[in-house]
Image (cartoon, rainbow, N blue to C red):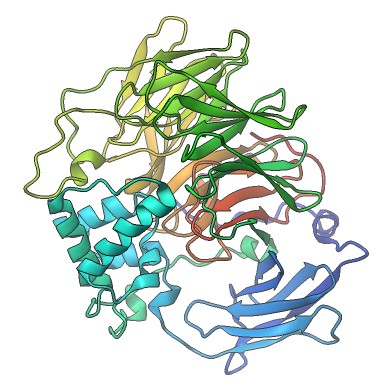
Length: 557
C-alpha cells in the first residue's frame, strides 16, 4: 500500500474561484516561523470571533491567509513541537500577522493515536483500557484530568455518566479495578509519560506522517452550539443547505438544525426524556429522521420541513432503540439497532406507518479477539449470550440491507424480499463501526480497532484492507464524494478528517483544527462540496473546504 500525494488537478482559475474573498470580507495573512526565522510548514492558525472560528494550515513557506468577516479576532498559532502563541488582531489592521514560535515538547499536543502507540498492546490490562475507553473517545481526553488516582477516576466517571449520558457505566468490579488502575498507571500522579510531572517520551518515539501539501489549501470553519456543553453526536446535510445534528447528551436531548446561509441554530427538543438522539438521515422528500438509541418505545424523531415540527415514531413491540438510518430506493427507512435484545435491522415503511424487523444468524460463541471478549476483565466469566449489536446500516442499489456488528467483526447482508441473510467475518477485526455502500455497490467498513478501512466485494466476498498514514487511526464512518470520486471518513484516534481515493488507493489526512474532536457516525457533504462533521466533546460542529472545487453544486450522499 503506497501513501502518495495527489497532484493538483485544477487550474489557477478554479483555485481563485474557490477561495476569492467576498467584497465585505477581510484577509488576515502572515508567516509562521521558528525562533531562528525558519518557516514552519503545517502550523495551524485559527481566528475566532464569538462562536465562529476560521482555521488554515501553513504551506512549505510558512505562509497562511485567512478570509474573515470584519472584526477583532482572537488569533492563535500552534505547531507540533512548538509553543503556542496568541494575540488579538483587528481584521482591518495593516501589515502581516507574523508569528515566531519557540520549541516546546509537551504531551498535551499528542493525539489519541500518539498515546495509543506508547501504551503497549500486549499488556492485557492496557488492552482492556483501550477497548473500553477508546470505545467512546480517544485517550488524549484523559490528559484533561491527569494526576487523578484510581479512586478519583472512578468517582468522576460514576458522577458524570448519569449527568451527561443519563445512565451508569456498566462495569463489573473486576473491570473497574483494571480500568482505573491503568488510568492511574498512565495518567495518575506518577503516571509514565502522561502524569503531571512525568518525563515525556522522546520525540523519536512519536512518529507522525508528513502533512500532505493539499492541506495548506484547505479551510476549516467551526461553530459552537447554543449550549457549548452539548455533545453533538452525528449529523446529516440536506440539499437545502441545512445541517441536522444529534443533541446526544441527556441535558440537550434534541435535534438541532444549522442553517449554513445564516449560520444560525434552531433546537427541536425530543419529548421522550433521555432519548439519546444518535444519528440522522435525510430522505429524498426532505424529511429528517433521527435515530433514538435509548431503550423504550420511541424509536425515531421525525421532522418534516413543511411543518417544521418534530414528532416521535413509536414501536411498542420492541424495547431497544435505533442507532443509525438510511433510505432505500422504495422510500423505506432502515435503522440499525444496538439493543441488548431484539437486535437487528428495523425497517419503517412511511406509506403504511409500520415497522418490521429482520434477524440474522449469530455464532454460538464470540470469535477470538472480538470486542466483547476484549471488554472482559481477567477473572470475569465471558459473556453468556452472544449478540452482535448492529452499529450501522446502509442499503445497496438492489434494496439489500447491510450492517456492521459492534461486539465482534461481523458484516451482515439481508434480502428484504426473502429475509435471507449472509454473514461475513473480516479477519483480525474485533469490531466494526461504520458500514457504507458506495455508488458502485462496493461495501466499505470501518475496522475501528484494527486501525484500517476495509472493502468488501459483494459478488465475490473478497475483502481488502487499507492502512491510513496514521498508524493507530480509528476510522469511524464514511461519506461518498461523487464529484471528487473519493471517500471521506472521520478518524477518532488520529483526530483527522481523512480522504481516500479508491482508484489510486491513496490517503490525504486533514488534521482537525481542534483537539479532542472525536468524530462520530454521521458526516455529510453540502451542495458546495464541503465536508461537515461534529466535535462530540467540544460542543461544536465544523466544516472542511478542501479548496479544490469551484462554487458549484456537487453530487454526494
